Image 1 (cartoon, helix red, strand yellow):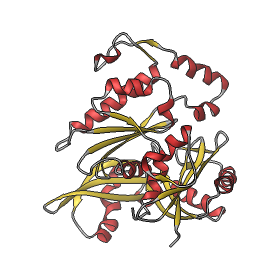
Image 2 (cartoon, one colour):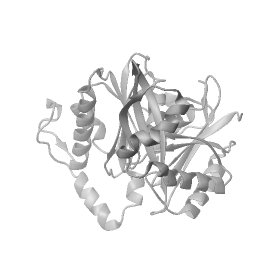
Image 3 (cartoon, rainbow, N blue to C red):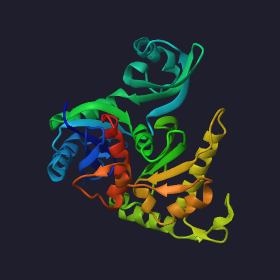
Image 4 (tube, one colour):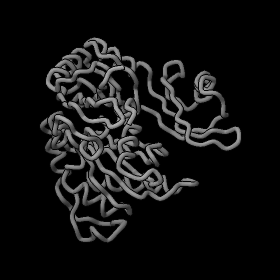
Length: 337
């Protein structure tokens, strides 16, 4: 087995990688990010394979990654993640039965989907967990593009599961933790306990991060800048922002996250969220942390790569340090630590 492995993410704005050591105490060995031209990728989907292949070569060269073994993290509004209960059976039998059981839940025929089931609990002969379904062609296109530059895809993981894995390194196993990755076009929410994901949501919401603005036409940039202008705050769940000002985009984000966590809390058997971790480039957008702190009844902490893993030879900073939390979490699935 290779001594290191690279967690890799493909977003609309860039390809991003983090190489970690495969040991009981994993460390970040190398990391990097290469911007992508507009219309090269979208939501973990390949649009221009040639351009992405060039960016991958630049990433491996610039970051000096030693390993060509990759764990691919995927996050997309087209990936279905939902609670599902089925008959308890051996894992191999469940894999065979799952396509027939969930066909009515899928947006495409089961033969065109990649399915996974993450068991969480069992009562009698019924097992409950998270059903994950992605369009097979989408995953195959990414793996084929990696193969063009001689990268070996060892596993494909849901980015939200990587976030749960990363947050587990920061809290006691009995605590219920919500980790929120605020990206350029999607915000991912995962509630986990001891690294085990209990609830996952992907919220579509465009934020004017530095990377997103590079991809935005000039006329649309003006619209985003106008949307970020502060306006008087109206209703708030808490009084901390009463009389303050907040942009409509940030207000929308705070409202959606508050509603998402309230929905989780309303589920039977749900435990209160003890801690909320924030990561992703969106945490740097003006007013985001303040608005969430005022809207959500849980301690909030912004986390970066160095909070999650020991850093051996690199010091990621800025948006890269915020974004690498998920990338590192993906890679940690292959580590023994």
